[in-house]
Length: 390
View 1 (tube, rainbow, N blue to C red):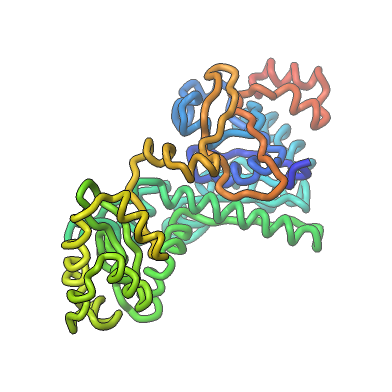
View 2: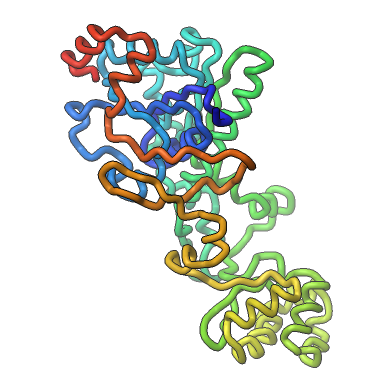
């Protein structure tokens, strides 16, 4: 028994934000049933890329898969029978699609009052932009992230990962868990919904509240931290490193490690406020000394002094790092076609619990067995297959 094994989740999600939400449940044992259209209906590879590619394999692991044509009334009828016995439905359709298919929250709750519906949209379930198609980079732009990412004066820059997609998925999963906890007291489910735009604005965090509280519009700060100085990227004799050293005590330690006691007597560097006002001068004093030794030596010396410091890795270097190896973040999974592959394990650890390592299923791989579990007779399954509903 895994922590979430008592919950059955019907997964209607596609691409990334929705599958990310569902993966949080699947990785801790939820009985996740991925529902896709039959190949006769969806003849392409489907949204989300090559089914045997690294992206698809990582995001859809630990699920079982069935096919169901929700554009046919028989398909909707079959889906409703699944809903009657499920705990959670997750979808990331555009808001109007649920109502058109007859699987909006009110319709589902009429079948099963305990059902929790998790929904992710681009811009929210209502409002002037509700029907707009959503995409991660659009939300990065509209949520403010691109305005503060990149070098000063460079112009807007997207983050190197789909931040809005991933965080919307995480927020949705948190909301689903909150609703399931509440259901233990009330016996009733909830509709949990978020959007790429909401998630992105929330993830702006202190940058957002700089505006909401003080009407301060954050600007691009490049590799420097926007408010904590000196924190940023510095060149060494053989590369670059990150140093995070805000505050008087950290400044004292940095000065000691670098041996720049004389330079630090400059009145412009006397306090946190002055160092912030003279950011370029502060950084230049550190930079002049840092180029005298290697990245590895500086990382070791700063960390020994209690100053946060680390290298800048490419992805191959990330997984070669001794701490990343120790944590087991490269996660071996045995795939029937690909052999042993390595995915990325869940980033949190629960003592005594080992998440399942079930490879991403093929489309419709478990259709017959799942339907039988939900009470469909063999004759019904054969009939649905003949009608190309499954």
